[in-house]
Length: 220
Image (cartoon, rainbow, N blue to C red; front, side, top):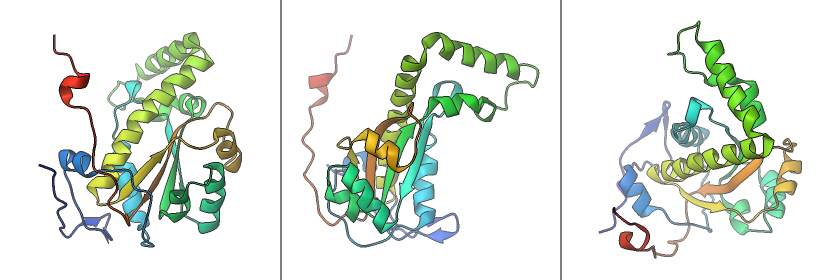
């Protein structure tokens, strides 16, 4: 049976959430749908930051965390982004849109930030060099694909994090990457897993229509 939303008083970073909804992972996954119509309710910045904090806990080999996010909230900026997204109305209607991209060059250039402090100080240079050598052998194209794949894991966490706090989302692949790149002056190596509209939904959305587990799983 589908989980029901649970409304409880909720505070994030000292600020009361507008929606005040907490769902566990299973409930959030069962409740999430792609929503394209949104109310005028504004998501507090504290809630947006909490969604991104939770999403940032996504697993990442070597702790590289190559994902980067631009949070578009300004009305005029959303209109520009909507143009790059082939006029999809949810881009302009949602409280905010997350532009998710991966930048492996920037991530690797700042490797000291992601190397875990648990490594002894005398081992850190060796660990860092090993990581850099690994990607140098892979080459730029494979390195960018790697970052793109890792950032899709972040995307999945973000969708569940937003739903767990009662916010609806629409993850979009329908956009022109070059127009998005130009809008925000992003480097040529940046790759784009998705744009994500987030807000208070103003429609129910389609009910889930998913394969049964036995349709896509084989136990051996």
